[in-house]
Amino acid sequence: MTRFRCLFIALIGICLYSALLTAQPNPVYLKTSKEIVKSALQERRGYQLLGELCQLGPRLSGSPTSLKAIDWAKSTMERMGLDRIILQPVKVPRWVRGEVEAATIVSSTRVNWRPLRVAALGGSVGTPPEGITAPVIEVQNFEELKSLGERVKGKIVFFNRPFPRDVVTTFRGYGMTVDQRVHGASEAARLGAVAVLVRSVTTSEDNVPHVGGMRYAKDVPKIPAAAIGIQDADYLSELLKEDPELTVNIQLGCENQGEVWSYNVIGDLLGSEYPEEYVVVAGHFDSWDKGQGAHDDGGGCLQALEVLDIFKRLNIKPRRTIRCIFYINEENGIRGALAYAKMADSLGLKHVAAIESDRGCFTPRGFSVTADSVVIERIAGWLPYLRQAGIEWVRPGGSGVDVAQIKKITALIGYVPDSQRYFDFHHSEKDVYEAVNPREFELGAAAMSILTYLISEEGLANSPTHSTH
Ligand SMILES: [Zn+2]
Image 1 (tube, rainbow, N blue to C red):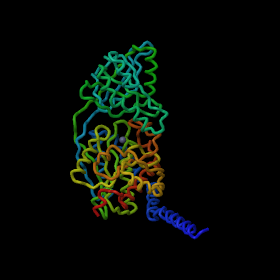
Image 2: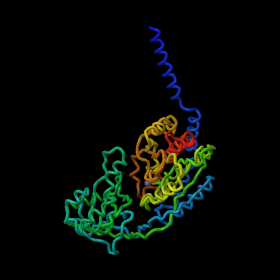
Image 3: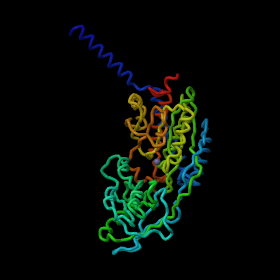
Image 4: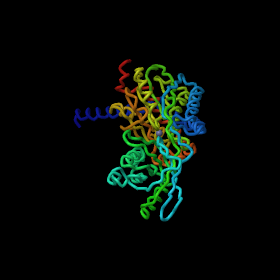
């Protein structure tokens, strides 16, 4: 072996050794990460608080129970001893479901007075007290609807496109199906329809209707819209094949009641070195009015608050300010998120990162990050710590609709748990406290805590706020 070759091999050896050294996790970070996971799993404080919140009932923005819950959130943050608590006023729409909510097959050759399980979609106008009675026409999508033209006039349009079973990530499946719920009423009204029934956008197989927001286009009449349980959707579809002339009566007592004041709830743990730099953890505090809004998104909010409580329990003094935001009105307007972003902009607040949890409280999988590639790589470099809470990956991707409104920020981050069961519960009476598993919930909170801790300690490379000190 020549001397030159010897030297070359030795050099490679040194390089490999130093690469190995730098790949070693920081022992302090590793220890803290393990302590965070232990405290979350052992004490379950956030999960217990979720139980208290769910007791209050669902939190549709603008409702009296949502205001009660906001009071509860403020006093919970006070009890926790946070350094600063802010209620930011936000005007939100008030929509009321009302007592009456029914659909019935009233004239068919086979059955009559057969009820169908329905629930008004959020924001829908109601029907006259006697309801609307009309023939039903089934479609799968807007293209098919348009091709029917004149035949839609005077009918109840029944959107019956199922949630795709063969798509692995359920959020993708949701995205492929939800247009009929959001825009179905106005698309049908353009052609003269009198009401719409929409197959529930869900992965479950029972007959519980799943609600959610819908929007009216400005230039067409507003017609009532209701979700129908999928078993009844299948039944109605079968019956229509035999008897295309059958008629259904729909009665909905819902109404829009203008706007009322509500609030974003904000709680801070002040940073010891850079108090003017914010790391946000967030969820949306409003829910739909069925169930208790446990997974969507009371759980996300309390995972965010659990981050601050874990810091307090473990006596971690963050270098940057950790800000927990409970956004109001994500479900039907994102007014809270817009108001916060506007305030942040006008005050020139320095946001380093914002992490949102709004995909349910299931087993941790990853963090999806909107930032430049250097920042994403840096966060991915923290996987040895994040793995302590079961996080498997860090990838480029979307964050959450609330935090995404913040304009000047280095990283927008979405907490991504397993997605398989979320749409079994989503926007339905099944989204209750009992549907949330304490271990899954707390592991998610621990994952968010570890990431928040590391961002607070290290900042993020390429941060627009980084160069100022
Ligand atoms: Zn949500």
